[in-house]
Amino acid sequence: MSVPEISAASPSAPWFAAGYALRAHNTFGFDVRARFACRVATEAELLAAVRDARAQGMAALVLGGGSNVVFTRDFNGLVLLMSLAGKRVVREDGEAWHVEAAAGENWHDFVAWTLEAGMPGLENLALIPGTVGAAPIQNIGAYGLEMAERCASVRAIELATGEAVEFDAAACRFGYRDSFFKREGRDRFVITSVTFRLPKAWQPNANYADLARELARRATQTPVDARAVFDAVVAVRRAKLPDPLELGNAGSFFKNPVIDAAPFEALRAREPEIVSYAQADGRVKLAAGWMIDRCGWKGRALRGAAVHERQALVLVNRGGATGADILELAQAIRGDVLARFGVELEQEPVCL
Ligand code: EPU
Image (cartoon, rainbow, N blue to C red):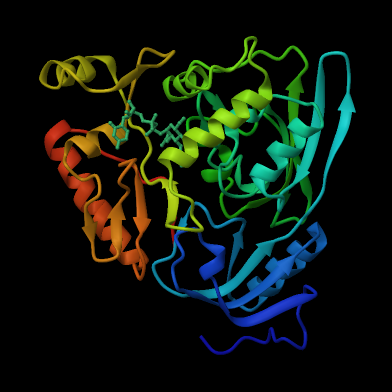
């Protein structure tokens, strides 16, 4: 492709760069570059930048915190660094607070802000890397809560029309690590803000084994308040999951597979210790981390790519790894899990 007409002299957005290093914009810390990058702080800037890129026949990539991507090579297009900012209470009634945050807000800072403002409900999702705008795409979840349970609506720009569209929670079609935006809406819509409904009738959600153990260990006063849950979630995550600033990673590299009851019973007969969670629809979710661990992968490395020592579901960049190294490691893990358990693992981060 020839050098496009977009140049630093005529950017759509006020901030623009060529040959831009993405190392600080992907939590694996891969040393890749974007042909161009620009920061977008408003919906108008976002739309103008996408349209500019398309007019030049260039791919455009919207990047939030870069916590769910694997770059396998330089990005030969325009990266849009989402900088839409702002958070506010849009409505409060007797039953709930409705809180809106712009897509570029840091997720954890937003969760902390809601708690400081006395609005509990998101504490189980503390310390998840990434931005607010990325949260609905894979319906982030942890320690017994998915963001879908607190999502009131998602605002997104339809790229074809330039119109802002408001999706209520049902229209987002949330599933386990899944949504409309990950499937049919992919490349068609860009999320610009999310509104949460935080019910005033708050109850702690502290049944998840690791979380309950941590709260017990801390001898937290009962009744447990949202701050205590937040602190315990932060402690559990720090103990188990690597901080991307210290050790590059994208959280869980695979989804926990969900299988039918009959094959599960057959599997359990062969693997009596298998860790599983019954689902409301009768199916069974399997702990992929446990299976990978059982295959002996924990702590093993392939060049700079490795399986985390404390959580086998997390692949890490020990330094100098490429996206291709991570994918090669992932493929070897997938093969072993399939051979031993007969289960296919599905990759969670998006491969670019
Ligand atoms: N396990 C092992 N060995 C391992 C890892 C896990 O035996 O190396 C066992 C654990 O002992 C436990 C079970 O597997 O019995 C599940 O492990 P854990 O509680 O750590 O949770 P997970 O299922 O591995 C999921 C999410 C995480 C989320 C945690 C807590 C997915 C793909 N991952 O992990 O989300 O933080 O539950 O709710 O659903 C992410 O999506 O990036 C992420 C970190």
